[in-house]
Length: 116
Length: 111
Image (cartoon, rainbow over all chains, first blue to last red; front, side):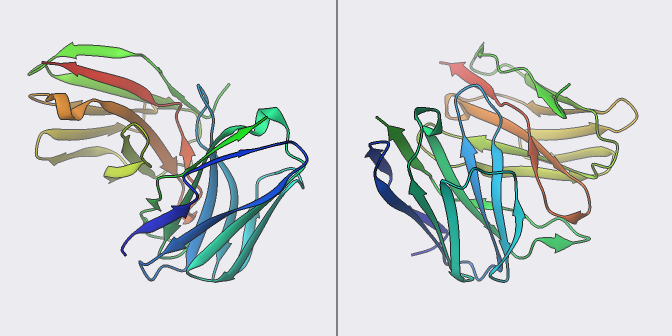
């Protein structure tokens, strides 16, 4: 496989459930990102990991818990979510996060999350 | 005021027309300017990026940046139905590659 792969593609869960989103990249990149895409709103950066270390947490509620066990894998653990958390969650990767030069970000196709 | 403003549309034009998509921004620290294309049920894919001011051309696509006006544009010539998608502008400063996105413009090219 090539590029950035996200699973599952769709997820429906109740507010009391616990689930996890998975992202895997086969590009040899060292930085990975979680974004939230809601209708009629710009993409919102949630978390950044650079060389497995969390570099950015964009004031995300603690019901979202990221995990980056290695540079190729990124997880987003979900618990006690709210209806307003229903959105498309996108994972991206780039060569590195800190650079004087542009580092293109490559996106996966996202997980469509619906909270009942 | 949002850091990046983009008209969400929708924008509908006939096949073969020239399309102009635009974004304005407020942060003068932005140095890299990107356009992403997002098809329905897919993730965004990078179309073009430009460093600082100037023009960049790639086939039917031209990106323009005017830093004095804090205004960027994407032109699509000879538009095709396959260009129908949502177009997202994004920007970043140097150093941390933190992208700030516009809302996206939904474009439909009618055969």
